[in-house]
Length: 197
Image (cartoon, rainbow, N blue to C red; front, side, top):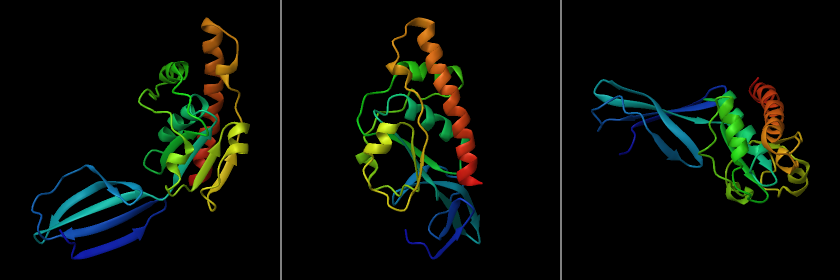
């Protein structure tokens, strides 16, 4: 299918691309598609003058959260930023190493209503070709070890204590994770406003 009309307009943080397909006669289809390196969504689907108009939107902001092992702190930040930036940005997380998703991070995030159980632990190299616009490092080691893939992106560093390194058990261990979670949540709320304000 080849569009006979194509119009792109830049919104505040969303690009909208309207395409008219004369061959399609059904409206109200909503599903995600790949568009280059961005995730796009059909957000409007209408028929005018027997032609099918669909509007695709894609985020202009791509945030990568980076820590050592993409196990705990970056995963928490990933979860909160997805919540605070919903509809305004794409959010990813990675590590300079891959340590696996920490189950205590999953547990305390779920306590706050954020489900990160479906997240995976990824290496930063996997995102080298994505158009990252904002890089957030949440531990000193990641800041020092981060490879340079995105020369033009805005870099921010804020180091959080790693609760998984503390020799604690039971409720004391969970409280340490909760403390880090709450610090990350407060920071991410302000960070989300900063990069979209």
